Length: 358
Ligand code: SF4
Image 1 (cartoon, rainbow, N blue to C red):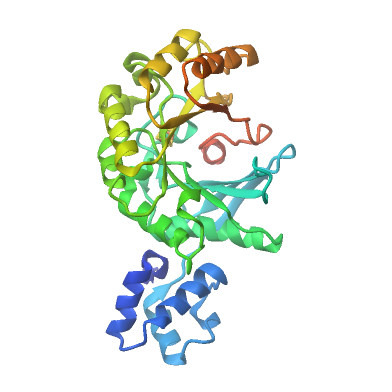
Image 2: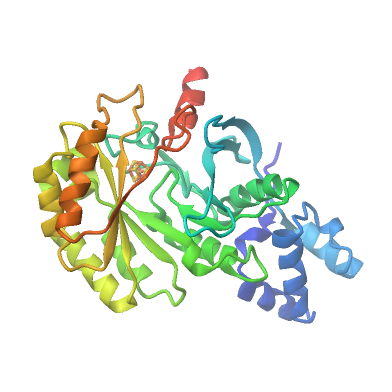
């Protein structure tokens, strides 16, 4: 059977849709109508867009599709409500997305954070990450990134809730799929898209320096998170092969530049692994590395995955590590392990499903 060649309309930004309707001699507000149908009302077909003239609906249906993802598997944590979705794409590849419900620490309304994938598999091969184990397949399109969000959103709508925060921290290195990721977060941020505030959208990187430089130029105030996981090159290279390309001093220098240029804080992710990077000496090195930087550190005790030889540090070791940071003036939070009773670590569910089919 011939492959369907229709373009995914979700690959079009709002300015691109404005241009499209202009070229069709249709008023600009048609673009806004289409956006609202897809992102606010969850329309699955152009026929649903009843306030568009029939000829416009027909044109769109002939040229475009509104691609979705189908649910291949889902796990929900009994302890904290974290939901892990495995979505199947049109070509049969699968990606993971996570919904993390939480109470607002400031006492406001509850948060519904979604964590989205940017690639099928990952080329970076971090030694503690299940996503890297299965290797890299391909970049996700903008439409496929958005389809993950829309599928979770329709789940939330049924419960009278909505997505409040987005982290591009699932499978893949977002900054090596730069254009698609940025277009997708812009659409999520747009008031006519998902309407999520820029400061509630975080793009995470394993330390892709050219990507951070580009990201610095974005006009929207999206957040940046950098996976650090070690404060010296030897340990970091042992955990993250990307460190052999972008050494720590170069990474830190671009991070400092970022905080100055944007006037924004950077969040550093630091997975604590017993006997690898969680000693008080490691904490002291981290204090030196981050000295006087506008940043905070998320400390994440390693989530034991059967495919890895690493293990989490004890509660006492975590506390001792954090105490050193605090004394050194580095702001940190210990992130509670979410979804501990499901395959919540990045890539675990996809890996488990893939193994079933081998
Ligand atoms: S941690 Fe991120 S960059 Fe590293 S292998 Fe996993 S998905 Fe890729």
